[in-house]
Length: 337
Ligand code: C2E
Ligand code: MG
Ligand code: MG
Image (tube, rainbow, N blue to C red; front, side, top):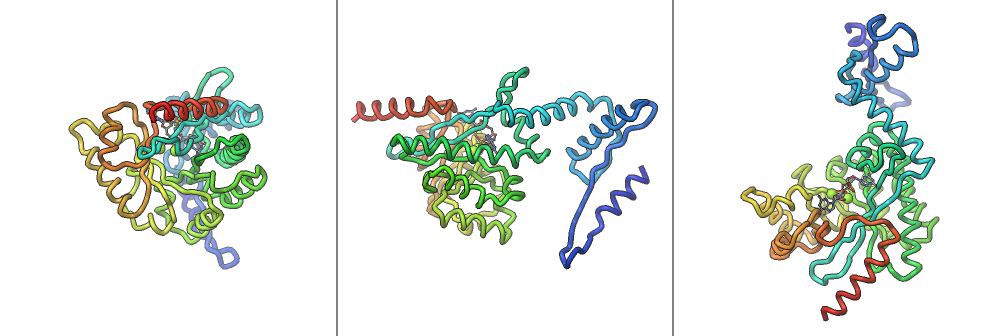
């Protein structure tokens, strides 16, 4: 392990390459013969597992192979390789969940949410596979597919006259940092023919906090073309709000962990109230996530929340149900008048 420490130390020294300082870290996995295996293949496989474990525990570290973590890591590794295959074999699909404008009672958007129908394991939740896609770098390809698929689908809805609202895509901060997301999104829009004002990107708070020049340039490029921006899971990240104006974000999505516990004795209702007041004073829209019942909705209305989304109205649905849902909504609204 002294050798490992030496390697980590050496690799993490800064290099200067063409006047640019380069930072680099590594993660080391170690397997030992004979206890972990007697042939090269087995040893490399177990060293690989240990390496993934080391990456998971924050990188720039080393780990010995440990049979106890084996099961979990093997699951992860097989899911990651399963994901590569899934992309080729079209096992991913997108479901869409409506967002409701609480003042006009109109549908004001749909959010695209990834679904993975695994051939053996059945449905796998994005809460499980998105973090794995992020740690393996697969989020780049997966995210690209999502952007293209949403543009293609939304263009179809635009053509049949359905689109009176935006379609939102979740963008991982890793995807944002690695790829040139503005050109990717604008390229997909151009290829599909969908006008940019029908597209919305949901970004995470942690991304915006970085405040780099490149981020400002990227986001204002997208905004200047008409793409909408909102912040997902708002309230779970950082409390520095200075960045909100700077990035031309238009809406805050209040995280469901606050929304769902609003009626008990906790501070959550106070947090939601504070977020809504702050958003109002900054001229931002607020979207409450995870609304499941009428009392929560009534409370949100009284707090001045402008939009909401949740099982109370609809679960995320396959694309072909979206036009039917919109029709039904129109009819119900017409009857209520
Ligand atoms: P999110 O963007 O915050 O999406 C909202 C999640 O809450 C969705 O879970 C949705 O199905 C769920 N939800 C909506 N209304 C309710 C409700 O009333 N009650 C409850 N209990 N849940 C509700 P889902 O689809 O499992 O997605 C989980 C997360 O995975 C998303 O959170 C998002 O962060 C990520 N994700 C999903 N699709 C994508 C994608 O295409 N790209 C990226 N980067 N991330 C994605
Ligand atoms: Mg979202
Ligand atoms: Mg959210």
